[in-house]
Image (cartoon, rainbow, N blue to C red; front, side, top):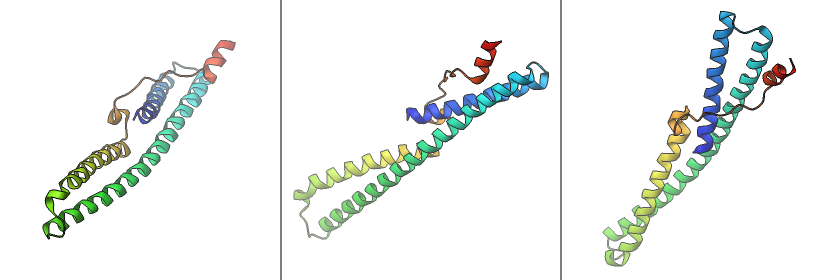
Length: 148
């Protein structure tokens, strides 16, 4: 899912930038004003990415639950049909098509549930397609630099 990939990428980019900024501060290569402004910007970016990824994950969890519910219902229906055929209540020849149709539906739902579960369990951009470099918006630090 592209939105989740972008949210994780935003979060990871902010984490990297904050880490590099801290190293520059430790080395004395950035003055306090720039450090504070950039830290504020990067922290805001980190919070934004975190909130977005959490929101998307919650929505995916809802979709996964709905998918699992449908999967359970169709699986039960398929099992019921197969048992009725085995005991002789239903004729196999007349019910091949419905059994096959339900079987395909169950397979599709299993695959969809697997994909959703992978997305729900993702913790990094790599888990959902890889890191995407997010361009930064004009920030407070950038505006402060222009005024000088």
